[in-house]
Structure formats: structure tokens, C-alpha cells
Image (cartoon, rainbow, N blue to C red; front, side, top):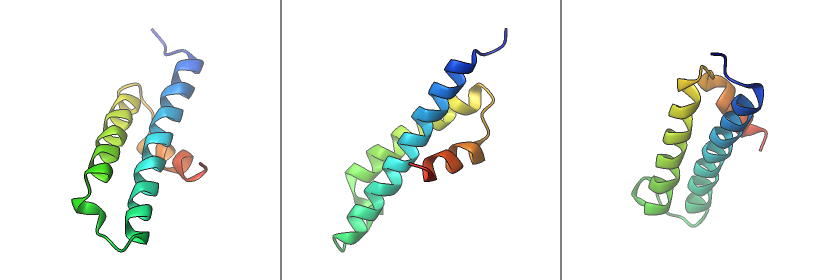
Length: 73
């Protein structure tokens, strides 16, 4: 059964937002003069991004498309 277009768009948007949030969290932490790798907020944001990206890949969305969409946010 094909995936509805609206669902594909929603899953792509969720993954793009989660990826952009993780990137912004890392930037904010760096702006504070800290390393983001040890920050729990970044780790949580990264875990959310991985979950959203995994869901997107399961329905056939290319990871590069997620990355491109996250940079537009």
C-alpha cells in the first residue's frame, strides 16, 4: 500500500525540525563556550532527531532530503 503524500510530508517535516533543533542546540551550547558533546540537552535533541530520521527512512525518505529540509528551517 502506498504511503499517502500528506503522511510523507508530515514525517519529513518532523525529521527536518528535529534535525534543525539538534543543530541549533549545538550552536547555542558552543556560543556559551561549552562543548555540545557533553550537554544533556544536545544529547536529547540528537536522540529525537535520530528517531525522527529513522521513521522517515522507514517510509523511503532519503536522509539527504531530511538534511536539506532541515537547513531551510
